[in-house]
Amino acid sequence: MTLMAKRILIGVTGGIAAYKTPELVRRLRDQGAEVRVVLTAGGAQFVAPLALQAVAGHPVYTHRFEPAGSGMEHIELARWADAVVIAPASADFLAKLAHGLADDLLSTLCLASATPLWVAPAMNQQMWRATAVQANVATLRARGVGFVGPASGAQACGEVGVGRMSEPGEIVSAVADSFGVPVLAGRRVLITAGPTREAIDPVRYISNRSSGKMGYALAAAAVRGGAQVSLVSGPAALDAPANVKFTRVNTARQMYDAVLAQVGECDIFVAAAAVADYRPAQIATKKIKKNAETLSLSLVRNPDILRVVAARAAPPFCVGFAAETDAVEAHALRKLQDKKLDMIIANAVGEGLHTGFESDQNAVVVVWAEGRREFATMPKTTLAQALMTMIAEHYAAKNPA
Ligand code: C5P
Image 1 (cartoon, helix red, strand yellow):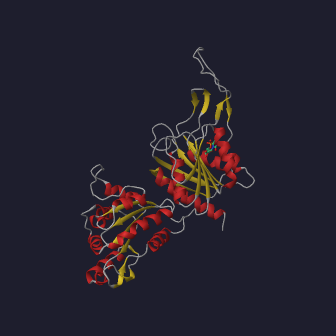
Image 2 (tube, helix red, strand yellow):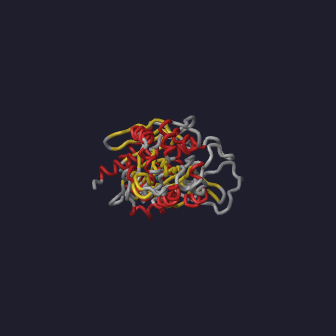
Image 3 (spheres, helix red, strand yellow):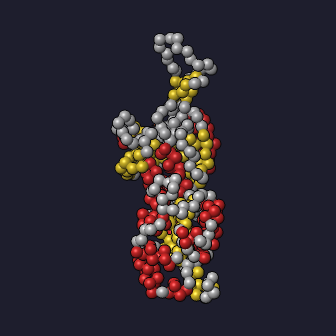
């Protein structure tokens, strides 16, 4: 699926070709894309919102300020999209785009968006040839707007010429090609995330402050990169990312078993979980009562999942995390060598930091045998994208095709 997890915003403006747009939406989704549709008043004269909603699997946006909305739909949608595709694009809409008008939701969000914009014009052949339309087309092309079509042939008005909207398949191909080959196409990526919980008695456990956000963001980024992704997660209050194989575990030993069961079929292993190093030697069968003044827990070591995976005869490309409170990079380098990893991602954790555990932000240093690279504080989702791209590049350098 060439558009796996790509977020495509379809704009529908007024034109008879709008009857083909539900087919376009369906085909984009067949290729794995997530689709949202914005329908202009003109578009709604030609295609019913419900038809588009049914194929998109999501309500259609029609108004700039939806009664129950935030009033910021144009910004939210503009940020959400990986690409905006106007199909059909009427002569009127091309003019609006060329001149920066913003009098409805679609034209406003086009102005608010920095993502690639595609148009599939559709209009009468005489209109298409009109000097004013061609001037607008030239303006838009010069600005980097992508054009698909128009195609030539019989028109709804009975005339023959250039002005038909390109077929949905052609529009899908143009958009898919523009994304290029995903960096992780065909790769199988196994990721651990979140904390583990080690039971003390039936109601208590030992755990840590890991939220799982970084590992989940990495899984989503790997999916966007075209990989087949399996996520093994300890208890985290997050929804499983779309399109990943998801295994939920509690303890370090369950995580170990789940990883070992799958690691033979993976190319890249990313250990983002904060695995408890120790577990209680015994789990009390009944709730421990507070009788004694002091209570000692005897702990035993948990298996080191990443170390075991990296020590296999034919290990996958292994990426570890090092969450440290001090001497972050020195500890990371030691772990890289000691656990025989390909790459380690080090971040500072601890009181007073607005990065690392539980935070939506992170700042890291990536360390590998021959180098290092720093990433300043940024949202974990953005960082995950950059890290996954780096992992893909290093994997490709180590495993030339
Ligand atoms: O040695 P340390 O626990 O600091 O190493 C952290 C790295 O090792 C992380 O990538 C973590 O996911 C992984 N790890 C593991 N199994 C453990 C402990 C750590 O996979 N039992």
